[in-house]
Structures are given as structure tokens and as C-alpha cells.
Amino acid sequence: MAEWYIQQLDAPEDIGPLRPSDLLMKVRAGDVKPDTLIRKDDSAWFVAAEVGGLFEAAMRPTIEYFCPQCERPVNEPPVRCGNCGREIHKALTRITENTISSGSVIPGQPGRSVQSWLKRKMLRRPQDGEA
Image (tube, rainbow, N blue to C red):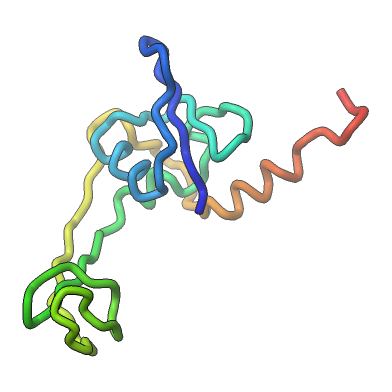
């Protein structure tokens, strides 16, 4: 799984590694803004605005699933509850509408996936011997 890092100008250390879901939470909280420097795994640092789809993904609703018997969190069905062992085909759900703290939205940026952004980034890397 990809690990993300956030560069903090006033802090001695970078924040990370973060899972993609943790990075989205930081975007929603306003901790990551379009001009925040981030990197994926061991890539170079870049501004968050360059990650196509990052801010759009942070605004998508979050769906959580729960066992109908014990009400503990579970993965998307079909699944077996790790707590009570029940085979679940239809779970209880909670949908959270997400927002982004003001100042983090990039107006007019077309929705692009993070995957396609990363592919373009990799294609732009200079080859050995190039400047």
C-alpha cells in the first residue's frame, strides 16, 4: 500500500507515513492545502494541488459498514464479522458526507484520478543521463 508524507515547514520532521485514508482526513481537516508539499513513498516532493483527484476524493461520502448483530465495524459485505462470527450479506451502514475546510478546494480543477496523475508523473521523470 502506498505511503504518503507531508512536509511541515515549521516542524523538524515530516508527517508520515500516512495511509491514503489518513491523507484524505488531513485534507478534510484543512491540514493539507493545495500548496502543501507532499510525496508518495520515496518520490520527490510536490504540491498537493498536482495530485489530480485528491481534493475531489476528500469530498466524496464515506460509507462505513457494521454487523447487524453486534454493531461492530466490518468490511463491505459479504463478510464474516470478526467479533461475533456472523456471516453478513447485508450490513448496517453509515454514510458521512465529507467537506473540506475552506481554503483547500481547487476551483475549476478537473477531476482526475490519483492513479492517472501518478502515471503521468512517472512518464515525466528524466531518464538516466538526461538533465
